[in-house]
Image 1 (cartoon, rainbow over the protein chains, first blue to last red):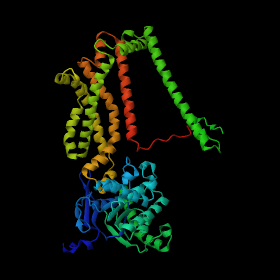
Image 2 (spheres, rainbow over the protein chains, first blue to last red; image 1 turned 120 degrees about the horizontal axis):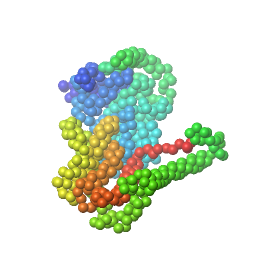
Image 3 (spheres, chains in turn cyan, blue; image 1 turned 180 degrees about the horizontal axis):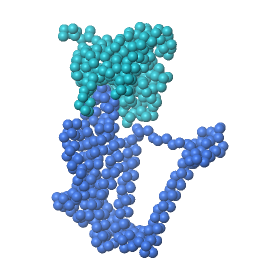
Image 4 (tube, chains in turn purple, orange; image 1 turned 90 degrees about the vertical axis):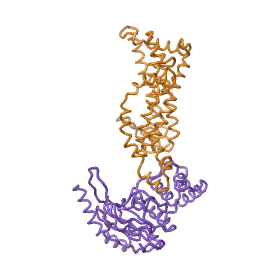
Length: 273
Length: 294
């Protein structure tokens, strides 16, 4: 393919006609992704919304290289994915911190795994803890922190590796509404300094609109892209009251039209199953 | 301000305006009262059991030839401690048994952890070998005692071998299970952060399997002692098992019970040490909170 000969011009992430099938214990295979196409430009913030269990997380797994497509192509920075790409950072829905390590030891895990010197790693770790406002908690264990603070540690743990691609799997879904808005601001702050390409999976439509440049609406399983909505709200965005602006509400109504049918369909399908 | 007692379950309600310090003091006092009551009940039950035993044995309701009685056991215990047996002092017997049990425990737990982690991390190996492990695990360990005596003689190593097999499978299966239960998201996180396969095992899998492994170490120390003593029953020249065996030969039941008491004390002591070590290692775990309302 000559089109990808200049890698700097290629999108950060590309999924081209990707299918992903799983084998159930009784030997039947079922599809979670069906002719799935996605393209994320460098520095672009993309949100994926869709009904629960439609295959959003599967998409992220394919990009990390932890999962392989059954057919089709997954490209990162113009190259086919083969194993875990070090340019990728991932923030999980569940608490994925190491509970037996202190806050600072959690943050420096990445640099140390990647062979940086201890003094280097800890200097960088302290710097990142300062940026997420947790310097005072460096020697605490995760269980001593609130849910929001643990997410900040997770963000520092991910951002310290300087990811060019940031994948987020419903990262804030377990937080209360107020904390979630604070975390959105934190995330946009950190992101604007790095300009990583982001794929943010969520089932919260308002969250998707508030954060993203583009919102992909996925169909119920097997997931395909139903619609792509560009979000033309200028940055920097003031998240505290963005959701009360008429333009925001207008966008949100438009996308909800698409989403509602799929959510309804997905719910019917899972009840029938 | 005095708390208002609510009858049901002894729950306490504090009157409005009670200060934090007062609630705290009352809660501490209540916790102390509870502890004292628990200790008092335990002592009462002990006294009742020993007293009944003594009285029943002395009045002939139970045959003191088989069951002995607490005062006789206490005397034999004292004699064992001060004079030992004909062969050696009590401390030497205890040393022999502990040496057998500790070496068996050490090797059993180290190999158990190594094999458990290795098989837990390697699906192919565990799929292939699981059937053999199931078969080996189905062998009641004590039937190996005569074989080990033949193989390794009457000395230290036959008992070590028996202790080893007693400990190994318990630790192995817990380590294996602990590895399998390691959180998927945590593993994926470590991999994406850049952990190599070895770093993943060492820094994520083993620490997260640690509570499983420790649970098995708690039980298996007792098993190590069982291994050593059963080995001594079958054939030995020293050890607590040997004391029990010779006491049986001369129908000295008091001495048999005295030896049991010694072993119980040793196992409880080991248990206590292990709990302290575990508390040290598990500082990261959340402590349990106490309700101030008793």
